[in-house]
Length: 212
Figure 1 (tube, rainbow, N blue to C red):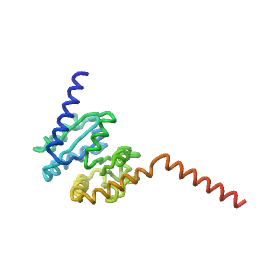
Figure 2: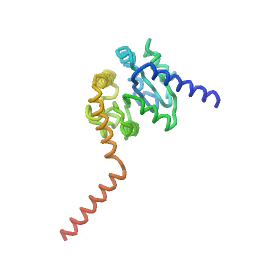
Figure 3: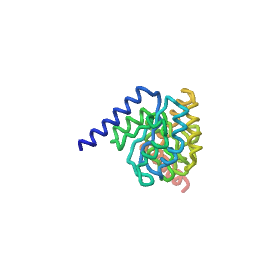
């Protein structure tokens, strides 16, 4: 327990120290594995960081491994000389994770398999822009370029292009996408959906009674 506590706080210290140095960060959170597209991130991370000196990449979640090693070992290797701007925070509790999400500029979730992407819902509700995949079910939530970005899974070039599109946005353009993302999630609110369903069923009952 003592060793884990020390490791956790060391990673947090490194994260906040990095935030004092760099101006923005990209976040992946979830299970670090191939199914979630972390190998795709690894293919483009060196070029993205190399072209953006004030950017760093943050990972949070359980490491599922990659070819007999940890996924983070693979990602750090692929980052090359920029590995110092790649931070792994490990598995975080809800409150700490939300804090990290709020600090991020862009959430990258290039999942190859998913049902309903709760990670995207959570991020968008916190006012974050998400890069998701068509294959991961993100197209249920995201309209490309309007309230986030959509790419095809397995495509490293598409991921790189989406990140570059985001980085080229003005603050005004980013804010529009953020507001659209928050509005999308608000429409999913269970209470609001329930009220709409009740009104719909009431209208159906009234219509049916009137036709009798």
